[in-house]
Image 1 (cartoon, rainbow over the protein chains, first blue to last red):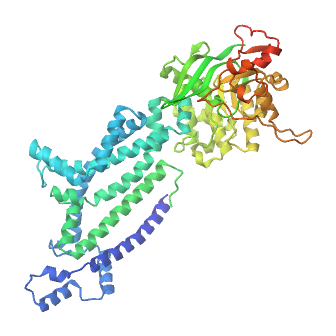
Image 2 (image 1 turned 120 degrees about the vertical axis):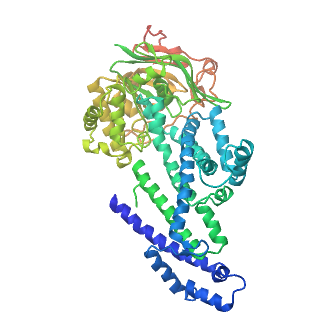
Image 3 (image 1 turned 90 degrees about the vertical axis):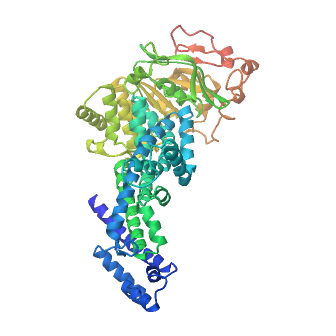
Length: 306
Length: 333
């Protein structure tokens, strides 16, 4: 098992090298000169050239790339000219913020969606199933922009319970977390419901009941373990995406997370920061997928891991 | 002989939207202790539905028992509460399913799938159940070290052995085998049948063997019931029914068995299709396919008549010829 995981990690490394090349190239392909952005509009050509030398932009792309890789290996993610600090700690602090709302949102989502999806699948066609399906449909169809604004309208403007934006108390985290979790919650509900319906039609479920196992145990133990497989896949991928930060939600609530940082970095043409964010995002996705693959082999032994 | 399972006038319907399929129509059947009985019929005759009704496992909100009763040792299974039924299912009455590839849960070890029966009915500890399950697996020819393996690591025949072990582990009084060898290849079929025959004898269980293979019946059973259109059309000892078939459907079935000796002929088949449960014909359900159909057959449902004490048939045409003697009370109708 350990050997397999190590082999998988080696493959992951190749993916990451690919990501560095793409991240590097994309930033270089974007129009505009970062050195010009750094300086006031009145800067002379000489000043611009000096800046380019300082930033290493006068070197060939190949040299620039290897400089970038060399720095990465030293653990240096580059320097953000916009924030005037190293990218590493900057990204990390933002990632922690995003993780806070993501983890809370995902936990709430799972607490709601797993029982809901399970019962909807078992009691197919019942009133509760109709409600769950409607809820799932809403969650998937609603744009996060609209949802965020709706929540602000209700909880901040109307009820005056929660602050509209910023950081500080737990109150600031409520709405961003709920917004992050809502779409995820409806996705899991819908998937688990249909997965449960499929599993309950399997002959091994009838066979399990023919052995005298109670309905409850059949549902919660024997059917659920089969039905959860697609949920694990989806959750892993979604968790990766969510951890990379929701640009819309973080922007609306002015939540200093990775999503908001990405927006700022791109709009201020902070090329080293963009490059590093792209790399971190890729690492997050790869790690999440790796975890899903490992989990999968524990739940379903039919899937061998390679 | 002690009556162990008695099905009387059982009717089962499948409902889906506006369509109603009458899968079982007033079926009567009695299984005695230690007896092996075969239930034969084409696909769609209602054999599996009968088995699932006994187990109380008709699909929810689709399958409905509309009439009749199923009694296990005098207790009505249909009126029984779910909780009580769970003590009978798997413990007193158990079932082997047709397809071993789909009747084992893929994400649990085979060991677990057998021990769960023991823990459910015998309330054994993990350790005791493990030892007992290992004993039964050995009995069906699977070594103990394979208990931690998952179903996908076994071949079809091996999986059916696991299914049989799980069904027999609590020494049930009735074993319902729903085409247990249909999904297996011929050489494995023989092994599985031999195994079932041995185990049924050593445990003194009653066996209800559902199949469309007449050879299996001849091999394994003492009595046979021929099913058509959701009812039993002929019933009797295997010797009687096979040597002297009375119902034209049974005769057709027996003629359809290819023979190894004698002149080579075209394979005989019964014309037409099996009765459509959504549009059952009036009168005798077999009359549209019967070459000896009379006027009465088309309009009136025939009753079970007694040919001799080991042989009953439900046919107007035979009713005229055979000595019509009502079956003795309590006997099989």
